[in-house]
Amino acid sequence: MKLAFVLFKYFPYGGLQRDMLQIARQCRARGHDIHIFTLSWEGPRPAGMHIHVLPVERLSNHRRYQEFCENLPSRYREYGIDRVIGFNKMPGLDFYYAADPCLKDKLVRERSALTRRLPRYRHFLRYEQAVFGQDSDTRILLISPRQHYIYQKHYATPDSRLYMLPPGIDQSRMAGPDAPELRRSLRQEFGIADDEKLILCIGSGFKTKGLDRSLKALAGLPDRLRNQTRLIAIGSDHGAPFVRLASRLGVGERFLVLHGRDDIPRFLQGGDLLLHPAYNENSGMVILEAIIAGLPLLVTSVCGYAYYAEEAQAGLVVPEPFEQQVLNTMLAEMLESPRAAEWRQNGIAYGQTHDLYSMTTHAADLILAP
Image 1: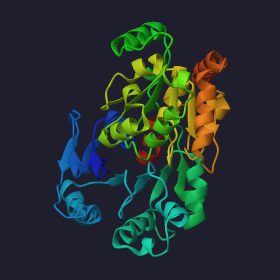
Image 2 (image 1 turned 180 degrees about the vertical axis):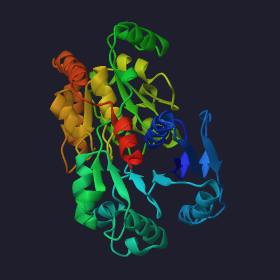
Image 3 (image 1 turned 135 degrees about the vertical axis):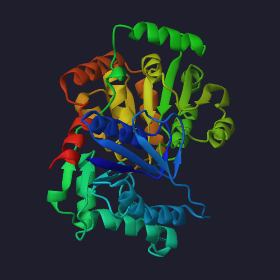
Image 4 (image 1 turned 60 degrees about the horizontal axis):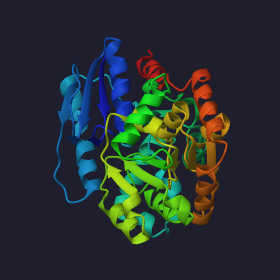
């Protein structure tokens, strides 16, 4: 079959983008022809796939997305596309990979009715309705149980169109025999002493991931502990606003921003804690990566994968409603907790005994089914 994989933007270190490419590769390995349609592409292009960049110049994002989507049906006909798999919400999909949280739920909880009537929100709500509404035929690939409840709450999507996928994390994140060497080399490279604590904040979209909350928690540590703690944020995003925030909070010298990179396993072994106090997070792949790497973690309960941290007993979960002081207290306690070794071993054992790796296989099975 000829398959169209569609997303608005591709860049190398986005979770959605990484999942798209892994599923596309799985389908290609089974002998199918892969066409990827996008507004923009950053980074290397995968061999053996057709990449179609369809740039649209409009002043607003929602207008760009609308024109992009309106141009797609003619392209599908041109290339003889058999099935369309979307990684952003839009009309005309056979399958939707549900990487993004429910917009309607967010607007109902956080915004006024007047705000929801603004043109950009009306546009995105129409696109969400086109995927999840009862009149749609789109089959939906869910990546966390929390999504099932929220989308059915707002759209009454039939169970027959909802499919739950297992996680699909990269097994290279698992702690291996080289873990001590990875830790030593990482800490040596960044000048982190043995008696210092290294907090990691990993993921593109620093604002959504709660990097401001992380910096406030770092600044809120007791003086002695703060002076022995470093925080490194890694992701494809603009770090300047957070560098300025760190300076205002008095922790600028304890904070470093790095662009997305390929050697994440080194950081997972070199760190002492993953801090992920996201404002909203559909899943949170880095949560699972930290667990199987043996890196203790502190995450907010809104993350779709937060329950894995509790189930694996590999860290702690910040309850809702979120309170900064609660995060500050929990961070200080975790950094000095005698349970660090226990959390590490629990996470490693969990990764060895649970299926956290087969998402792409299951997704391809569904997409390619007769």
